[in-house]
Image (cartoon, rainbow, N blue to C red; front, side, top):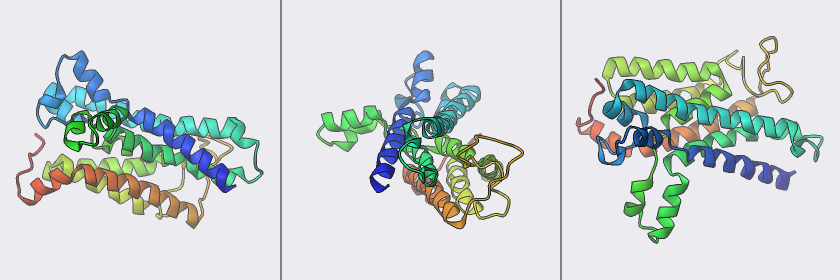
Length: 250
């Protein structure tokens, strides 16, 4: 069972990472003939897209980045439910939480995509040179993972972000806090409704699955991993917030 679980985890991690490496900010900016890496904050994420190309494009990039994480988990669910993974063990349903590993690796792929790794190896691990191929900060991807786990958790994150943005107008601060809060919200009673966690059904509005405490702790770990990645990617923003040099979102 352990070897089998490792095989499933690696498979889903690879799917997530490859999907995460699709950088919609880069694609849209190239279509618009704008080099995001030389404009604004030089980040290819939705915030810089919004400041450079307009809010409509920023929202579009956010939705596409969230969608790749969401659909990645759905794809892993389909593979898990209808592939050979079902043939090897009677207890295979216990490994179902592994589909959410793809969510973590989608965020990792978005932040440090395949092209970044290629550049890193080609430059003999010169991180400064490889930086030009790095991705975004993983906020929208993390949001897509949350919505795949439970729409309620996704909505908690979304409304938290909007409230903080309206009050402080700091995208970075809202991004970090809104990703942390849902990690603890998994323990709210009835928040489990609509979890993508029943291995016989995808979404069945007439069915309520109540996850065990162990599963809730597992989900909290998944969300915290994404939150840590987001915070790491916002390290420069944290320094600017402390020094009161962070730009506000207008």
